[in-house]
Length: 428
Image (tube, rainbow, N blue to C red):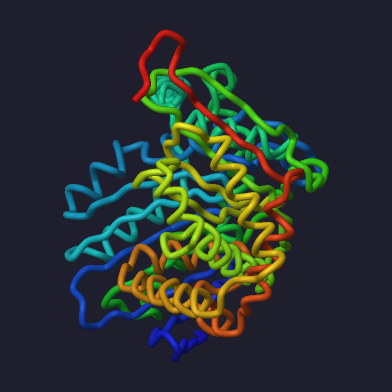
């Protein structure tokens, strides 16, 4: 077993790749009673087209999320109830590029780990149970489609990207999930829920060797074939559309403003771009930046304003969102500030202040077992270790952030999604 020390952040991680291809990561925390386990597959809502054993499959939007819902079913009952009865707090989620199942518990951790590994690795569902779930997920889809913030975000994805599957909702649509059958779910489980396409991350007062021993006992002994994903043709730098507007029940206009970036291949380059992107947003839009003060003073944004760097396989972008009486004015102001940074650069004192603050926040986040485990799983699937950020972060320069801002925050890469009140409805 490999022991990795990340001295800059005071963390130790054990890693072993089992004979079946599963990568196991353990963060020993002997001073704690509670343990956390995260079992994840490199498969998410974007992964609708794939090739397995020479055969291509095109699946409906929403399959990964649908499968997540059904995986808790077992021949004996329901794994969610079994874990809860053992004092665990279990749950799961599906994102664009990962599906993860997890629990935390202070007692019966090994027993709960065995349950987790068992139900995720052995699918069991019937046509009746799959059909019943369709109604439940259909109601969930109806709720999120009525959410103006979700609609605004999905419209931004359609405005930024011409064909990348990030345009599709992870949950799918009522129409797409109507095409999901038990055979669809079993095929996708076979394609992606193989140990060689998965990771197990554990944090707590556990012996790393014992965690590996449990995984060897429960999971398949050998790796199977892994699906090859296809996201279509490479996207052009230009945003697909400049503006998408919609009318819904809102009291004030809400917006999502995005800038299409350059997708990085997996590895340290992808991590470095993530870190540079986060710093670039802080100096451009953070609450210490000149632009934030101006927008807030002029009443163009309020405390709901936020921003993020996001990337998945084949795509990357910056986004800002919030409420505004004039989203177009926000768009123009950001473009002007990006141009100014291109001419004058970022003030050195602002850069140092922002860099210290971002690093401090990231290190404080390591106190969360969930952040450690989920972060490591996502990082591993992207080709690096989560805790590598410390050594890379210190070497990032102001010029890198400036170059990302001037390269991405341009007119041709910008898209704006706005949800306004329906005509006749008042706005504050």
